[in-house]
Amino acid sequence: MGHKQDIIEVGKRAWQRGWCADNSGNYSVRLGRDRFLVTRSGVSKGFMQVGDIVSCDLRGKKLSGRFDPSAEAVMHAAIYRARADVKAVFHEHPPFATGFALAGKGLEKPSWPELILNLGAVPCLPYRLPLSPELTRQVGQAIAKHDALLLGNHGAVTVAADIHKAYYRMELVEQAARVTLVARVLGGEKALSSKQVQELKQAAKRSKYAG
Ligand SMILES: [Zn+2]
Image 1 (cartoon, helix red, strand yellow):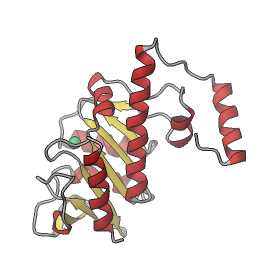
Image 2 (cartoon, rainbow, N blue to C red; image 1 turned 30 degrees about the vertical axis):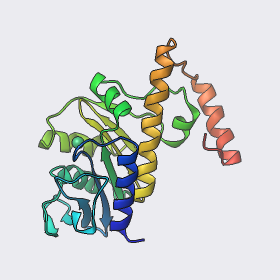
Image 3 (tube, rainbow, N blue to C red; image 1 turned 90 degrees about the horizontal axis):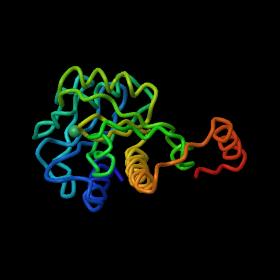
């Protein structure tokens, strides 16, 4: 499947999961060193066609396509400039992860092996005006150390070597937000000690266990 078909496919899944309302979210795939494909502005992610995906340079300026790129393409561009290993960016507003972002709370307590082993801590960045250079800069800096971020009062972003993996990482972030919320209703998640986290990582390495 081509990159555009892959983007259309993850959009359908995100829409089916109830992650996007109206035209929310934007996804991209890097094409070589200096350009990337990104979803256009003003389209439901559940019903995209090939023409709804346009190409941009690493400043977020459109290179080709009939429609304008998502206004948040500048954030994707900042991520690609910051991390040569990143080949795909997935930005959405899934309800549980976004609820944590509205509360300014990250998913940082090492309490769930699945999250510890696959993503580590997911911090929540302080609110910055959407589309602003400050937000772009902030995300570009924070993504150097994390594959998933919550954006304060906004949503979530994940990155990976391909768009399917970036999408799956968002599934994990959203699931972590759900289980953490349940744990908090029940008195709060219990953090593993740093010794327990070390043991877990070693055991996982030995057996290729990933939670
Ligand atoms: Zn957004």
